[in-house]
Image (tube, rainbow over all chains, first blue to last red; front, top):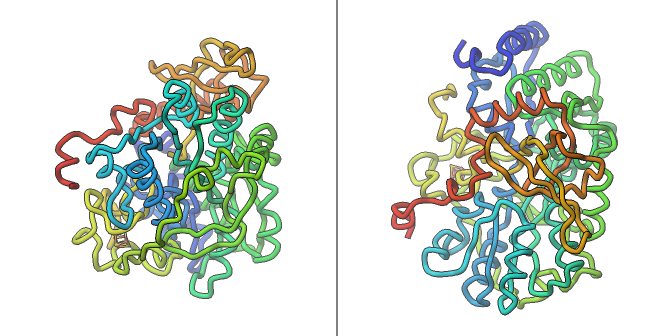
Amino acid sequence: MKFISEYRDPELARAYLDEIRRSVTREWSIMEVCGGQTHSLVKHGIINLLPEEINMIHGPGCPVCVTPLNLIDKAIYLAEEKGVILCSFGDMLRVPGSKKSLLEAKAEGADIRILYSPLEAVNIAEQNPDKEVVFFAVGFETTAPANALSVVHAKRRGIENYSILSSHVLVPPAIEAVMEDDESKVDGFLAAGHVCTIMGTLEYYPLVERFNVPIVVTGFEPVDILQGILMVIKQLESGKAEVENQYSRIVSEEGNPAAQDTIFEVFEVTDRLWRGMEVIPMSGYKIKEKYRNYDATIKFDVNIEEAEENQECIAGEIMKGIKKPFECPNFGAKCKPENPLGAPMVSSEGACAAYYHFSDLIAQ
Amino acid sequence: MCLAIPGKIKSVEKKFDGMVRMAQVEFGGIVKEASLEMIPEAKIGDYVLVHVGVAISIVNEEEAKKTFRYLEEMGEVDELDIQSMLPDESEYKNNS
Ligand code: SF4
């Protein structure tokens, strides 16, 4: 058994694997929603250790991967044409826009800065009063409080040359979209632990009831994932569909109320286009009217043309679990992490990049 | 980018005219600033999960240490050191 000895608790990992093998009587498809979990599943060879009956589907859970082409183009446009200092997280650098990536724009001279935290962008705005500073605010619910907080800080500190380009996406509506898609056949979900640190677990009860599908809130380490899978399998095998919390050492039912208050101080829920998928109703955050001066799409005229997605990329089918990365004709040939055709090949949390880096750990 | 990394609160100060509680948090040798506004009860010596500069929950010491060790082995704490995430010159050339 490759790699198991390297796990935080190899004995426990083995016990969970044995128990999974004993419990499975038929084929089941389980989707992990979080890209961190995809990365962990592949990197640790868990995919190969699971019994054949279990098909892991790598969901749309990487906010970098699902950020629409048009928003990347807008970010580049702001940096190049409007002369703003554009700040973002490092993961966004290589994501291809319709013409270039932020990295290429940076190499051509645009002032693009990689930050650890959006709060640092507010400081940059304060230090550069004659410049506009825009933070490219991508992320799931986990990142929303920090991005919202940067706006709250800017307002409180009277900093007016700061705004954000918001590209927030939400997990529960994505689960709903996957379940409503006729082509996808997901039997159970691992929900993302760190998202639930903020939002708690209550949002998942209506989904479980409506779709009769087990949802287990799960951490991202190998043992967490194995335990989460086991919990889903036990429910499926006994015909149950419930919300369970594998990650209760970190996640509480109600989440973090102060973080939720901060999110809803600044943001409200809106429809959002997911790259590789479609517009999912009520699946993202936009800035409230009250904070319109901090919304880069209002502050600057960024109505640039909607660009076509690369037709050769089948990211949508991959994120819905219809195909695996190996089944994409471009995988590893025309499409590599250094020169990606689609977003799932860019971020280390995207399914295609994970398969590319650790292809020797996955049976093809 | 979605991971939260556990670290220990070394010091706490009020910033921006006393409006905001900010902490210096240590992650295995690297010290970073983090906002404590989402967990007002946090104090010096506590271990907290920090995500992009904001502490989002308190964790116990043992859990924090195990998780940090795991993340470090996996190379997942690189984002604390932004320089390490920037591509080197050769990559710029390949891409352009
Ligand atoms: S391998 Fe590349 S082209 Fe194929 S689906 Fe993945 S990102 Fe798209």
